[in-house]
Amino acid sequence: MSSLSGEKTIEYRTWLPKDIHEFVLVSSATPSLEDFGLKYPNGYALAIIRILKVESMRDEYGWYIAVEQLIKPFRCKGKLHFFDVPDNLINLLPDLTDARVAYLENKTGYKADQFISKNVKPAIEIAIKEMPKKYKKAYRENAGNWNAVESRWLLSKKEYKRYWSPAWAL
Image (cartoon, rainbow, N blue to C red):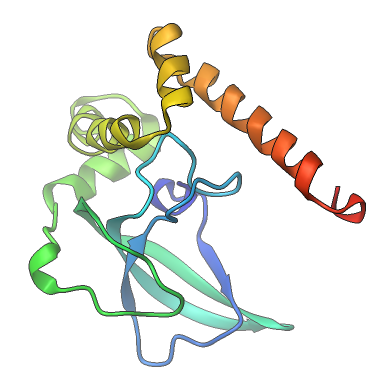
């Protein structure tokens, strides 16, 4: 989940955000190799994102983004472009903003531990509860080792691509 980790600071789109400066980050309903994987809840609202600036880049726009505020994850069906999310569903977690920064800076210490216990672990618990049975089995068989789950998932994605993709896409 590279937007939440701070690794992904530019979102590329073919359209302008117009007067929108903040939006709710909703994870994809389906795990993807590039962004959200099995370790994260899919189809959930996760954070408030701020658009810092927008630049034209050939055939698309680069939206420079930053996490404004973490929110308590909740099930949310994403849509293309912006859409309204009822305010009563959004529970801000302001105490975790500093904790997230501490975690990103060094991953240790009280604040980093607070971020892990109040944000990362609950997100992983949702992901475990909702992941397909074959991945739950891999998780249990490997004593909660995510690497085993991720390896199995990546292998299934490669097999799927090999079988369903046209030869030129490989």
